[in-house]
Amino acid sequence: MSETEKPGETTQFIEKMDAELLGWAHPAERLRAALDHDHFRLHAQPIVALAPPGGVAMAEVLVRLREEEARMLPPGDFLPAFKHYGLIAELDRWVVRSALRKLGEGGGALRRLSVNVSAQTIEEPGFAAFVAMQLRLAALAPACLVIEIDETDALDRRAAAERFAAGMKDIGCQLLLDGFARRSVSFDAFKALGVDYVKVDGTLVRNILRSGSAAAKLKTILRAGAATGVGVIAECVEDGKVLAALRLLKAGYVQGFGVRKPEPIDDLFGS
View (cartoon, rainbow, N blue to C red):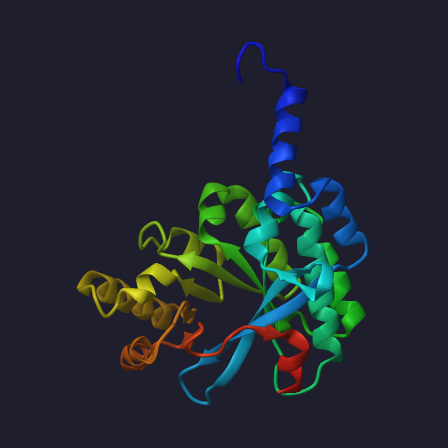
């Protein structure tokens, strides 16, 4: 900040830039209204088991923001604004509450959902109690909910992430470490959080046919998963060749557009 620039002016400038990027006159008010009036729609992308018995093991919950004329904004368009205005933890709660309600009402074979949580939520002490209440309201077993923690958040907020993980395990939910091996293949967070699943970062998965190093890293992760009983999910599987290679490597689970695309959560329950 320059000597002549005031904090209020900086805030106004940022809000102006947000308004131009999002096309909203008052971004903070628009985000608050979206939360208060349920202007979101849930989608989900299946995570498929390769080993017997196969089929959809769970589905990752994704959120879209409903705009005018039925237009749906993808998360990359609005999540940064939620983080900037300190509302992302409230959005996490909305997603958990809505996803569990759908799961409690839904039919079909799908019995487990995974939900991503933000760094703000990881540092929120009351989140485990909130989840426990939502599970009771939906009459669901805690193991039906898998909480995804990003590896970067787990490493950068180690103490908070360990407290958060312990709280979620205490109520019976499962944990998934997302973006695993994005920085390096380190099992520190893997062990400290006591996770049930790791989701291998898509960059590593996409490179297994082009890079011997990437393939070797994935093999190491798969061996560690087998030895510890942790499920390994390969994400960003976009084509049949990568999927075939993952079968040969005996990967446990896969996710990506080459497996199944995201779809409205109601359609998934109806399948």
